[in-house]
Image (cartoon, rainbow, N blue to C red):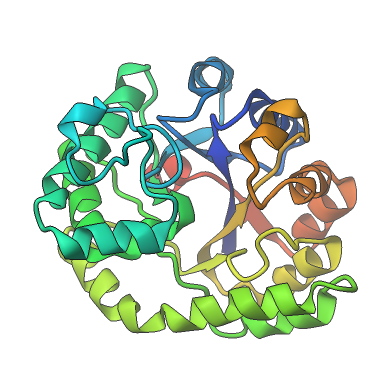
Length: 294
C-alpha cells in the first residue's frame, strides 16, 4: 500500500494573513487541505479564496474556545462568558460541561451553527477537526459525529499522535527542548481517551487517518522534522497538522501563542526541497475529498 499524506492547514479564516499564506502554500503544490473557522474574523475572505481553487479540500475547524460564537450568545447559556466569548481554553470548556449538563444544549446549538454557516457559504466540507483538539471531549465528539451524519462528512481527525513522535526531539532548534517535551507529554496524557474516541467514530462509520503528526511539535516545525517524517510514515493515509501564516498587525492583535512559527511553516510549505523529499520518498500528497472518491 502506498504512503499517502494530507498536509492540513488549521485556522483558515482566523486572519487575512493566514488566508493569504494558505493560498500561497496551495500554489506551491504541497498544501492541498485546510480547515475553516466559521467564527474566524476573516471567514468571508477565506471563503472567497477556497471557492475559486480547484483541487483543494476544505474542512471545518470547529472552535469552542477563545472567539465569539456563531450562534446568538443569549442562546448559549452556560457556555459563553459575560464578555461574549467562548471559554478561554479546553480546560475551561471541560469544566463548564462537567459542572452543568445543560451546557451540552448550548454546545449543540453552537456546533450546528458553525457547520451550517460553512455549508451556507457554498463550501462542502471534506472533513472535521477542532481548535485545540476539543473534540477529544466525549460531549463535543458526540455532537460532531451527529453533524457528520447529518451532512454526510466521512472523515474526522483523530487527535492522537502515533508512537515514535519522541524522535523529533533530535531535530529541534536550540532552546525549544522544554516546549517540545511539554507538548509531547500532553499527547501521551491524552492516550487513555483514544479507545473511547475510536469506538465512537467507528460505530458511526466515520474514518480517520492512520496517524496525525504535528501535535507534539506545534510551533516548532523545521525542515529536519519534515525530512524525518518522510521516513516515519506508514503505508496508508496519514495527516500532518500545520499552521502557516503571515505575521501582520491582525495576527499580533490576537495575542496567540503561534506567531513567528506561522511564517516559518509557510516557508517550509513552499520549499522546493521539502516537496522534492516527499516525491523522492514516493509519498502522495492529497486531500480528504480525493480519498473518498477512490
